[in-house]
Image (cartoon, rainbow over all chains, first blue to last red; front, side, top):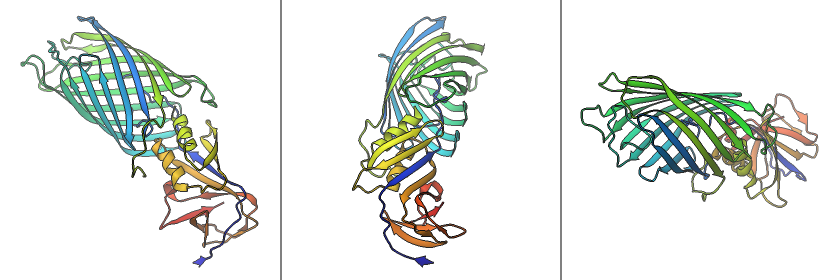
Length: 264
Length: 115
């Protein structure tokens, strides 16, 4: 090995970073992708959900989402009667130009004062429960697909109903506009179709919902989401089998102080 | 949204003067403040903290007609580099060279370079 030590006179110095960047068609409306929000960012989200079916109540949900450490993010939310805490950790990431594969684990807990009569486990704040599982997301150019599966355990509800269930979802997203993305000021239009299901344990009851939605992303920093969800198959006695969902969120980059030892 | 996160993270580095971005090709061109030391780890970690990774990191500098010699180890910008070239080549002014370490992680403290 030849070793020399000398100093180049670097009059000009530029770095060119070619990043494994992908577009944002995995920011699903009804589920989370395996990707984590940028470290030290905070997102404020306000949503409105109008339920339909046997019960026609509505929820206003306020949520704060943040990433306090690389590969970790947390959501804290409330609908002003129930509250939710959600934690997600990205386990694996394989990046390529305009493509990536990611795996994550998640856990959530919902605290609720309600005690509805439903054999289905309701996750919109109607029941006290915990839920944990994994997420696998693949993004390929202008399409992103994600699969989520998790275990559900509720603490409230009629005692004859099973306490446990499996929840799953399969989400697909497409970037429709812009065709050529060359400015952060360009509004993005994404279209999503998500299948959301639940199978109760020790009970033959299950449901499978479909939820198409559209999403506008403004200035690469805020999102407006509109979706509708209804049952494709359902033999549960849940109170609501359809819902309209509207939300707006705003992302604050680098809003949290830097923690020590956040390097890879 | 994701690209802007990378842009914001790079722009906030204290040694970075300007960041020019081509969103379509995912290329971020960084220039540095006068009399401040550019940090390869700082750039790498900023991109990783935004949730992404670096496919290629190129350095453009005034190489003053130096020659890239196979397996030559040298120090510059506060780092140790090693040429991983098949042939020797006299570098042109403003020659673009690439750090080829996987994930831009130095191997035993050495960044491997190719052009």
